[in-house]
Length: 160
Image (cartoon, rainbow, N blue to C red; front, side):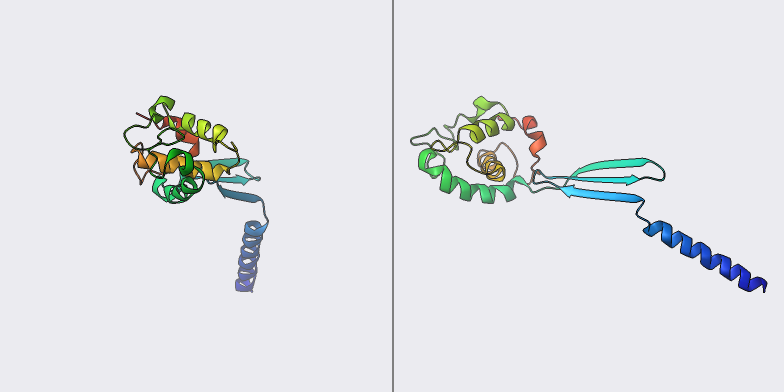
């Protein structure tokens, strides 16, 4: 009789633990943006604990430069030259470019996104502007191809 009662209590506790785990008191949200930042947030209402972590797990500049090269060929090369050597527009790649005048990648992105393509500024997607930026930065040696792209950190990428 004692064994049956102990077994019954044990089963009740097991069921309670299982119900507590499935009750939905804890919420976990994970999101990844195209900026390369993954954010996880976990909230448990019973203990009022919130934990947030941010890790940089996005694409590398080289990966983005592949798409950027295609966008550049279709949207930029007619003015800046197929190799970025200049033409109607200034050189953006090679020895004669003046990208250093923008001091960092955030300033260069702002210039590109607000004034290019010349015939219809601001008409590319944000991702396309990031891809073109990555292509230029890799081609001109401002970043290593394996560096992880982080749109929130572009002001820390010097153009020197």
